[in-house]
Length: 558
Image (cartoon, rainbow, N blue to C red; front, side, top):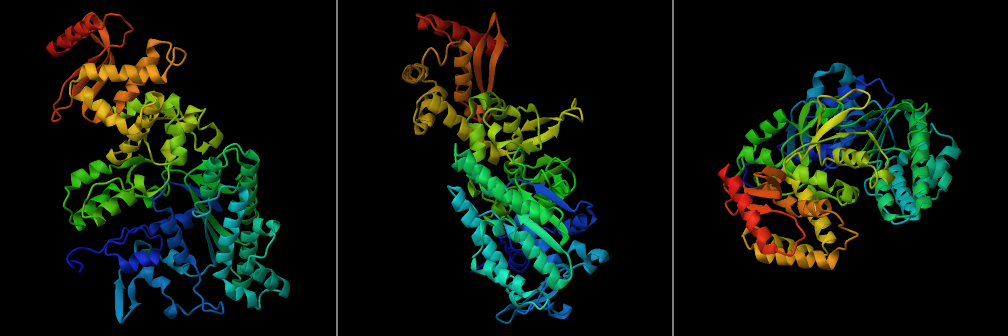
């Protein structure tokens, strides 16, 4: 039986009404509606990482603007509608003889906005579940979702405001009996029918537009022609409904990335983009510092608020500190248990493609040591350049939520550069895992053996560690792979990087008459041995060991 003294927390829902009626913990983001009404652009693309509230906000917009109708498509009287109460407050019947009293949301204090509540037809089309291993599977997934979408407006099949031909075409969509050409303009056709039925322009909301594009890019491998077919399908769907559509009131598209060189938006010069680097709409995705403080005060946990903040530490987006709402809410719902909620909530395919490339490993080492890296960031990302273009890597990692940006002090407006860092302990885990995968693959080492192998070093079993390392190097590398000392240095840097949470790790630090390749000094509280490493190819290992010991003594005496 639930402890009634603890607030009820509903997590994992994208349904705005369900959240309001079934949760005692709610963060009011309704002023996004006012910001949208003030936006001059006819259509906009808002990109944010996964699980940052994109779908919930889209459903909020739908519940606010949508005309509530009966089964014949006739607008309900204001007293019979429910959606208005979600925003202005009131008592709602929740069934079983029970009611829920809602308080007014922030948008209720904006009369001009409230006048527009429940006065528009709305199309909300979500693409997050459209995935496949071929173009045909993607097309079928889109067709299924279009069929489901049309079923929400079955009254149009008999609308007196439509011609017989339009009614018949609508029924074909209901049955899924449409051609590829009809599929490409299906959203535009539906917006025209809704406009004709209600005599009012339509809000078009397209959620997670890039999911089928990103997943097909990964799964199609070298089948570029098929991927181009996917792009063409969405290019036509988006272009027909958002460009030169006389039935459009306003359009909102959400996704993780703005995909460049796909020509998806080449003809849509009416679309304005807002990324996490822009201030507008920033506080409506994720939680602000003030909101997190309020939640931690309202919801009692077994974990100190400082620890929760440390684990899910805020990003700095557009000058505002923003927390990942998914991790915070999951943590509160679990009575403060600290876990990798966000990392475990979805796939990381494109991110892995970046993190496992050779050219990024030195930067990952720097990030794991708590340092920042300075890079140029591009708002538009070309998927094909993720493995070859370092700027594409970091732009992807930033917009996907794996880096926190701060504008570099010497950045210029034409080519802005950012100081990038790992935002918190939760996200740090994926960098540790991927650098382990990279280095164990290079050494032909089972990844399950990494911890036991590194334990030899940490516990001072240097001879055993050296022997095992030599075995890995001999069985996995050749002179052509590691022809210079710096190649070995970089490989060992990757091997040591995951230890940065318990050692201060430095490389090529000057000591005495020279400098050691790597120095590991235990962080206070962890204990253990200090480790000095010097990489040499020699026939006298005992002599080198003596030199290393002398170098360590000089360091500790400084």
